[in-house]
Image (tube, rainbow, N blue to C red; front, side, top):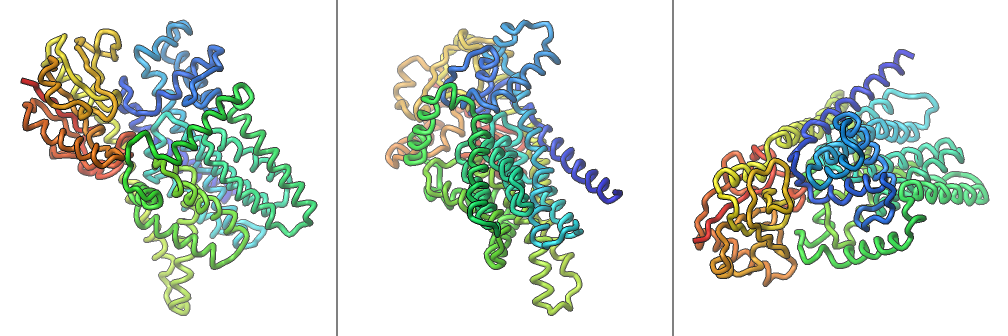
Length: 555
């Protein structure tokens, strides 16, 4: 009993630590909206609460996720705006949406923290089956705690748990499906199969690609030593659970099935053709996702995951197939697409951290002892050192990220400078929203705006879509360039060459009057696509979040 209490305490402590890591910095950018995807969700959660169920395709609703956002929004209204009517609070979506953004991010942080105990259960179940013992052993408990600790501090998961989008919900239910699949294999209970199917359906309802986790459930049934009639019955139950979970997670399939078909068609086009003319390098999808895992989890973590997968293959045990099938098939599926987004990898993280823990805590020490013929006593301490080589860098990067997100954003600082130094009515050419300072044009007025400007917003591929001569002749007085637009390459090499020539000529033709760099030394920040969402790489060279903002005066 004492051991059980201590174990519960340790898991709860890790969960609390995970929540703190994910809550610190959650107010980044507020009251402004800089994350480029959050606006697809929070406005329509409130609309759903008002009885509107015909929502835009990209809102992915009505859905369980929007329902959770709505609960957060109602809680925020009661806690911070009790004096406002529903209509007045709803109007804040257009005028000052920070309560919606903050509540959505807090929900993501909470969902991210709740993934920790599920990872512990998944790792412990996996190790329990591996030891084939009915009683709980120290090895399986430690494997569970190590996996939970890695997940607690894992930079990739900590980072994306700050954003008000459904990725942490997907990851939570995917982890739950994996845990229940391993449990179903061990217990042979029909109820575990059903619950595993429901969890997989809920994950799929949040993000369609997570349906691949159902393969782990199928394996958990097919690999049981039972009669085929029993297998067929369990598979049928798992499918029913999958359908039920999907409907709960995405009831829009019943409310508006045409929207679901349209959504699937849109995703199919994106997967086959890439993203709207932009090129997210490298072009090879597998290399892109491997590179994403490298910067987001670390080289040691990637190596341990590989060792864990090799151990799965060498052992040839059913439990290894159940655990390893999802991350392998999921990674292969993503690698076959052209829609590169690093966050797509998040659902496989609970499985990979279990493989890391298994490799570092069990496999490596066993290999060392075997190679030394049992004479090397510090085999386990070597495993501990390897685990610490994952934990410490991820913890430090997560803390640095949180600190950065708590600082002012370059776009906010640039806005304040512009409103202090440029007269109202100044004609400014500026690139598309989210990546540039949030200025007012008199019709769209961001919070805390003190002056209105004549804003000439250049869409498409940014400022370079117009020749320099046009800015000189059309009355433009200032140009504001964002590195987040400049540094995203486009698919057409000729267009990309023309764009880079344009941005290179800007400081030669026009006077650069001010630069706001996120780097501590004021230099050019390194760019990868994931920087658009939040700090991702070279964290220790940054003192601010956001892009580099350059302001040019047109003579």
